[in-house]
Image 1 (tube, rainbow, N blue to C red):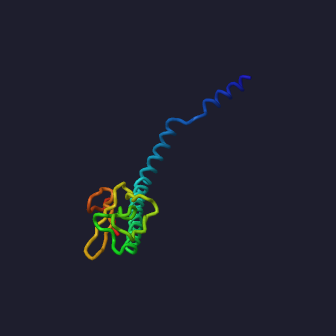
Image 2: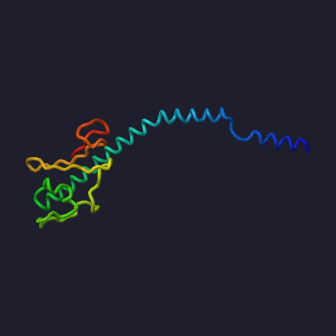
Image 3: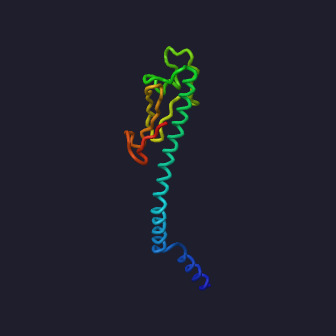
Length: 144
């Protein structure tokens, strides 16, 4: 009977991890996070830029449909809002031109900029993560 009690005590004391084993595992996890973390963040930044480019392409298609119906692109005062809400005095408007009844924000939560240039050319721009003109990497401007 003593052998049985000794075995139970030995088995109870052997369960679990030592502090050294836990520290080794934490160091290994820290090294893996240090190596993989920057790569994951780079993919996230490029995914937001790619999303902005796709959204700008969708907005450009909607402006082109507006142009076909009305005969001109939205002017500077109407802006992109003319794609979802009929501007006053436009009888040939056949919108809304976007699937949702609201304009999307860029991946960083900012509004897309719209301007009409000489010759009827329009530009749709996302100013990037910093929401300021210019910049590099995640802060660069993305336009149609």
